[in-house]
Image 1 (cartoon, rainbow, N blue to C red):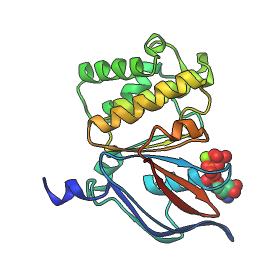
Image 2 (image 1 turned 60 degrees about the vertical axis):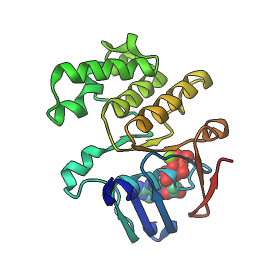
Image 3 (image 1 turned 90 degrees about the vertical axis):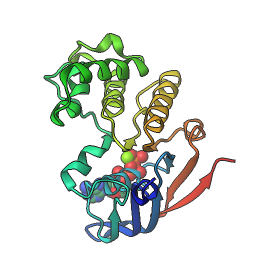
Length: 222
Ligand SMILES: Nc1ncnc2c1ncn2[C@@H]1O[C@H](COP(=O)(O)OP(=O)(O)OP(=O)(O)O)[C@@H](O)[C@H]1O
Ligand SMILES: [Mg+2]
């Protein structure tokens, strides 16, 4: 094991985010270790999406710093190691569900046969194998969410940041999809941070963080 294996996949230090003059987050210190799964809760507007975007490197903090000591130093390689399930629909409308799921792997030059097998497996894990040939505009919001989850699962990412990925799903599908993400990411030693409004779903994770008043409170499952 090398020091990089033990290093947190993402580390936020005294992170603050301001939109204009409004302070959304402040003083956030957070390490996400490899093989961990973390639920992020908090009221609507509390800053969950903002925090996930910072952890993904998609939004620069206004104060403090964020680093990825356990991921690649090269920014392009690192971007491929981080998977994001966005809160808003994010599938490419002109590609089938299967093509959407294979896209991140294809862009990284992975062999076509492998990517299709991995994508079909991932779609199966979220009960969406039968949607493989559908175009996103033909799918319901919840079906699109499941395809987006499959895309994150198939991508072989080290760090997956999932922003209310099950918000449009019924409870049974939500739990199946969240567990598939949790266990799929854990199987490769990766880490998952998943924002949710569902306390029962949050209970399935080994660590729970609540965003409130711009900072985070930790609680670990007993
Ligand atoms: N691009 C932006 N410009 C200005 N303000 C923003 C922007 N994005 C978010 N905000 C504000 O920042 C705050 C936190 O928003 P954020 O989307 O992070 O909350 P959230 O916890 O994810 O909410 P929800 O549960 O509804 O998704 C809100 O008050 C929101 O209005
Ligand atoms: Mg949000």
